[in-house]
Length: 213
Image (cartoon, rainbow, N blue to C red):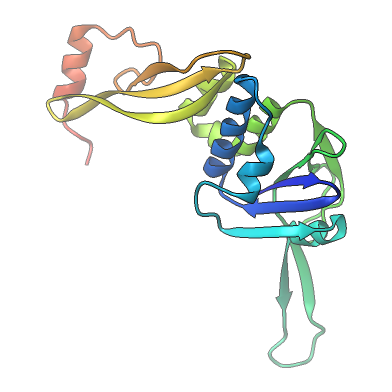
């Protein structure tokens, strides 16, 4: 997806995957929670990690073109006209000029054409949710974060193993509240929750069971 920022009528954007998009927005939210500016501009213009593509100094019209992948199909027999289709990227545009967060509106969208309709998000946390995309559908990590109004700061190197079986691992979260502090929360692979209530017997059974492959 594209994470873009507009400032002084100029748009900068980076093409990233959903996880990296979440990480960028989470860092910017973290700055805001610390009483600083929501620095998504710095995240886009000077990304901390490698990105798939960087686009700079775009006009709104150029950004409209950039948020579509153009596919041209040509007839090898030269009998038919070339067919041009447009595949829209999912995107989030942080418009700092108007203090708006713009996303695409897929309602009534027809596949293969330009996606012109837009929607507006109400907060940076809504943008964080939007960035997660399909991750949140099957990812207990993101589901837990959204249910508790948290942002994922980073994974940790804390692993708890028994008999070479990974039982628990910790993640650093932060509540989406100004002045909040990072907290470590462990995920239990035995009961597949962040609120482990496993008994010693259940842990022993989990760590002694044979792998299904």
